[in-house]
Amino acid sequence: MTKLDVDLLVMTQMREYVLDQLEARFRAHKLYEASDPDEMLARIAPDIRAIATGAHKYVDVALMDKLPNLEIVSNFGVGYDNVDAKSAGTRGIIVTNTPDVLSDEVADTAIGLMINAVRELPQAEQFLRAGKWKSGEYPLTQNTLREKRLGIAGLGRIGKAIAERAESFGLSIAYYGRTNQNIAYEYHDTLKGLAEHVDILISVLPGGAATDKAFNAEVFSALGPTGTFINIGRGSAVDEAALIAALENGTIRSAGLDVFAKEPHVPDALLALPNAVLLPHVGSGSVYTRNAMGQLLVDNLTNWFETGKPISPVAETPFPKT
Ligand code: NAP
View (tube, rainbow, N blue to C red):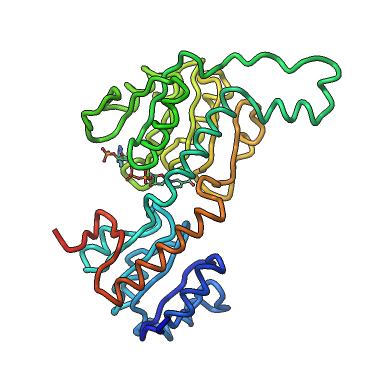
């Protein structure tokens, strides 16, 4: 493995499997370890040609302004709302993400959350662990997956992997997105319209300004008192206060959430709700899948500097340019 004559800014702690490769191929500068990150940046800024980053580590215009020779930002994760990709595109900086390799894992997690939220499996386990079974059976759940309609907001790579799985449960499927894909599933051009039509609503929408607080009081009201809301996309797409109110006052019946507006902070009001199943953003969180994502992050960087072609550039920074 030859070392490339490239200085790389590593903005976030990476798995050892990834970091070992980055250090073998690049002069890796670990910003997250610096006692004075501003001083470190000022010292190495002109040399930096690449960035490796991940969730909650922002690559914004202010940072790009400091790095005159930046060519590529390789992001760990398919969601890249932590990178100002539009501004990168206008500057000719490539942004890459890690699509496809995580779709099946995230879809598995979404299905797990859905079953847990609908059939109350975590609550039933708590009941058993608390020794309550000896005094009587866990109540029958009001909800079931039988004869239900599932709505998927964001029928992209992960959304389609969820739909494939959901079909085997016998769920009828509808979806919302900006584009009618003209496929067998029923299309709705508004979130409210989809929510009105379904029993279970799963969000796989990306974060960012375009989807900010898209799931609001009106959407939860449309989902209705027997409805279940699942979020595997981004927390920013949900008006969390409206969701908490909807769960508290019975506007919807239950929720399953893997993502939150201000991670790792989860509002106390959500923690207190018995009808919310909560996960700490573990959608893609297996060693197998995180290694695959890490490999794609590394391969995007090495391909760029060895062949001049990124593997998975995002839509805002297409390659070759359209
Ligand atoms: P994708 O293939 O790009 O799919 C995104 C879907 O959302 C597309 O179908 C798109 O359809 C729709 N969409 C995008 N922007 C929209 C907007 N402004 N309004 C309405 N619909 C919009 O992405 P993916 O690979 O499935 O990943 C989706 C998201 O999942 C990521 O962005 C990330 O935030 C999240 N994610 C979460 C985890 C986790 O651990 N929980 C893991 C991986 C990914 P149209 O273009 O037709 O609108």
